[in-house]
Length: 333
Figure 1 (cartoon, rainbow, N blue to C red):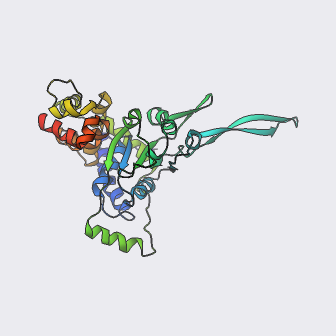
Figure 2: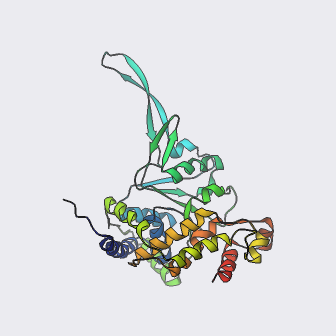
């Protein structure tokens, strides 16, 4: 008989497991502790994440190592300009079969694409046209895909971790705002420290790659993920999240001048929802029984950076989404 754990016991289990997951991933990835923490927030909050960083920073290795540590099935889609929607979702094949009477009959059989995995890496997602990118919209929102006249459920859990190169623009496409809004977090992956880079050089040239052993079973991942929405959050934290999201919209009373001058569209209600949910996951991963103002403020930038649509004037004057978010934070203390 399976033992039913209380929320407090599950909270302790999640906090303890988080440490073991970090240790497991560190066998293949050097450093990037803050990135791993943000990925764990997205994963246990059952959200999608966009990893932004220059090539060679182990973004792909981070995602695959996390999947191994959590015993999740892993699917990878290399986004290219000639990629078709069916290459992601799958396709119907016409198949001939013999029936009991020995007659040949034809029927359609669905061949699943690489999206049918627990953790899907959409590698260099901005290298494929918007039509193909749109193949992910239904999957990311509804966790199912429609091919032809049939709708197919995706595995549970199902999450997309996409990567994007911020410096190379040739042969790339802008991500649609509707798709960006479906990512819970935008996680920026930075350069390692000098000491970490020395360790990377030693480890990757030794011919003995690290091995990631599963830390949690998929059933435990499902159970702990269901805990996150039940984590309480203070009224002060919710008010700060909602007010900050509203201050990102031009025309909102009290919005800083940077928003009025440089923002075309601010974050919608999904932004404040994502911010509160990410704060709950952050608190739970630290073993805290409730999310507070500190948790919301810590998740403010990764939960909101990709939801700000800047004007052409902002691009001309070198104003970034980070500048806007910092201006909002100064106003909403």
